[in-house]
Length: 317
Image (cartoon, rainbow, N blue to C red; front, side, top):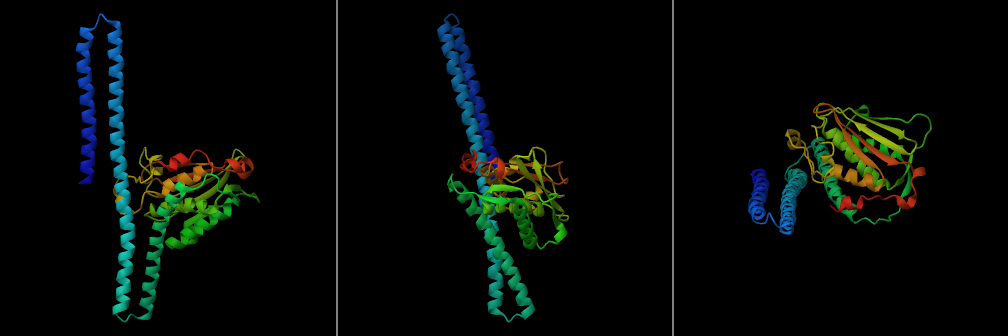
């Protein structure tokens, strides 16, 4: 019902814009006929018409963008509500069961395990929302440390395996040949947040089995590239950039089946840009898997005082 209303609002805004522009042109034709001998009035009318048409077009574009932004925000609120309500309802059910009945010890331990998983899911959702606000308010001159990227990636892989109860071969890191130490200057907690979000997405969108491959490589002797590839549902054409927008989720059946808040990859892009890097997604199509690549400047090529690029404005959108 809400989707139908929003589509109707977009159609109405576009229709009104077209009608207004058509009316302006219809009024301008008599103006030309009446003042065809006066070049000054003709030019003045042309300028006024151009300004009015530009104003109507801009207003229509802003209205459509606002409707779509509201739609993404509503989707985010619905998703967050679900992500909070579901584990809370589960926790309450198990606690009431433990309170009212005598439960055998093995079943009690099973209840405890499920409750811990629910609290972890709840905490993860809250942390993502808080992280989005924290990045928005972060100081431009916050201190960065010299970090080795490979141990951070290994920690993130271990966290993801444990969170989703995966075997060791489900997520594999291809080691850098030799004893090369790839170092970047940044905030370890933020980089872990970005990498874990990408890994979580790779796992969630691999419904037929998790086979995630991670690799590190040096690019042009100045940057390090972390590539995370899965064999999951892939991306439809034209979605490779949209998935990094705030509150955006790829439309379709998978978006309904797989729950999320729509801010995970937005956080990834924001964090990577704040570290002077870039992130991109590549997919051959639906059911062809996805590769997300994070490119970060190596510490030797990045002055400490110029870590944060122009991504601050991106966070404040």
